[in-house]
Length: 444
Ligand SMILES: CC(C)(COP(=O)(O)OP(=O)(O)OC[C@H]1O[C@@H](n2cnc3c(N)ncnc32)[C@H](O)[C@@H]1OP(=O)(O)O)[C@@H](O)C(=O)NCCC(=O)NCCS
Image (cartoon, rainbow, N blue to C red; front, top):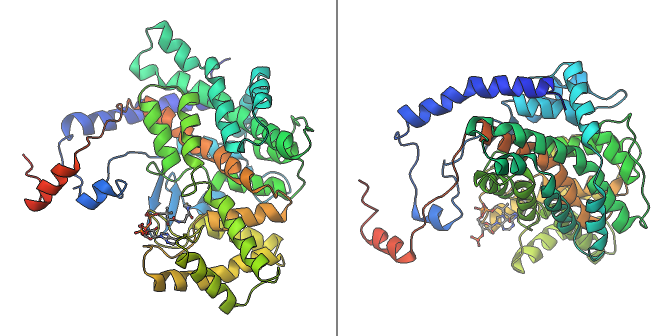
């Protein structure tokens, strides 16, 4: 395959950027930018500045910015790429932007679409592997397995194995693998959906459709769900580097594992209930609350009681709280605005809004969480449910397909900038106790 203009642009960008990283490492490498406390050491490395990415940045107050743009600014900047008659830009145009930081022209976005289309055929062995798995396997297990088994196709592993792949050229096969993986994710996810939940019947891809639109078509959805798919994939794409799925993908890739190994590992982290699986849990929790009240939308008092019952039983309120954010997640807001426009009378949506009025107060009174406001997962499931995607355990797969855009863009840049293998230092509890008694570790 000849090199695309995206790849040429990326090469130019990486080469222009590389001296900045080299200078920081070589000339300014010993400058101190953070300190580490015992609670950070035991408490999940929270807030320690020890990762670098220029693809997105998460501000605790305003939420995510992709390439310095907020979510509304991103949609505004890409609006020339809105699909005809739709409110959302193509995922292809967004990926170009995420990878390069530039808004693509129509021709550049079309080229990404054509490139993905040319790579989209899912190999028969992937289908065979999926079909050999117990049908009640979690769809995230299926997705992760499908990604992992494609590792045999890795260009990166092949070129590395042949020898002579120079460090500065490693981004090239990482890009190739990432593009192939991205092209195949929607048909693989759709295959899992139709095999597991739609009687093993399939809808072939439509070459006229964009990446997001095609996914909607292949799972059997009609308008405006195509826009739901585009919006989901875009808003779930990236949340800087420290979250479990992004960090895992980056960590595994730092060992020069290829994109298939790395992303499959990232998906396994996304499948955890404190991360991506929360969006499936939110819906279960909401519907449970309605069931207990004979399927009526509860009053605020009843809802308050239900929130307290959840907390008093030792559970978290799913969809609320965040490791970094301290305000309402703009990804929640983007979905809320879409729902207000397209499904204002949906009873579950009304309940989501009521929870937003009550839960922050209850969580504040409860006094544990540092952030009583909703995150992206508080809204995701309700929109899917409205449009008839009612298989909760599939929701994390949707998150995973979107998350691929960000984490793969990151590992391409990781190789472009030659980031090192990750190897933080661990200490023993005894050492911590000693340093605590000494009032801190003596730094030389
Ligand atoms: C996202 C999450 C894992 C972040 O965890 P964190 O960084 O440790 O959050 P905090 O520092 O605010 O946690 C402090 C305490 O508040 C609790 N807390 C945080 N969010 C809570 C919630 N939604 N409901 C109840 N308690 C919560 C934590 O469990 C912790 O309690 P502990 O000291 O007994 O262990 C956490 O907020 C959570 O579990 N939320 C619900 C699940 C969810 O929505 N996940 C999707 C994230 S995008």
